[in-house]
Length: 255
Image (cartoon, rainbow, N blue to C red; front, side, top):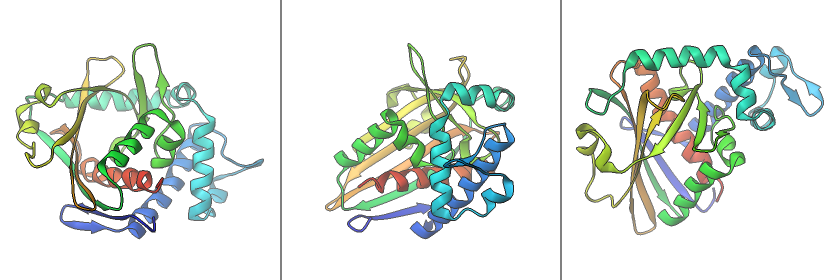
């Protein structure tokens, strides 16, 4: 990203590119071991990798193998391999009982970028939604989506915690959100993107992403946030702040 400068601030601390790249390395190794644990064959080209082989992958090679394996399996394939894990995550979210009018915890990440415009950044966001190769490359724990006649089902372990969740995200207007989230609306940030995330039953709401952006002289700033039920572990909340930084960092590398 020679022509782009970006800064990620989480809880007042800057997470630099080297930190995010190291974290991505660790999560790539983690997801390769996890997929193998769930019965998915891990291959580097024609070579089958076992657990010890995975631990000898370099950062660059781990990304390559991880993306190739995750790209090989459709969302429907992952649903079959991870069936019991999805049941476990569904049980957790149902017990937490998220609601727009209930107390919440929030994952936050401030993003400052010089070198591209908001409009170019929005193109990245659209690519993540429409191009699975970009989605899978944006974070080690993004799986292929499941496309139905009515919507798109995403797969990821939120906050790099626990097991993956099957999630439907429906676009929403800020006016549809609870008062706590609306109170966080920044008047000097003219662009807002939000939605409501549900389990595949379409009834159990589990979180609300709410991202705000404003242009600057040489780029833009963004306040990235996801709102969770109050009972989620703090590890999930802090983990998803980093998840946001990682996926937007990888997205910016497209340029």
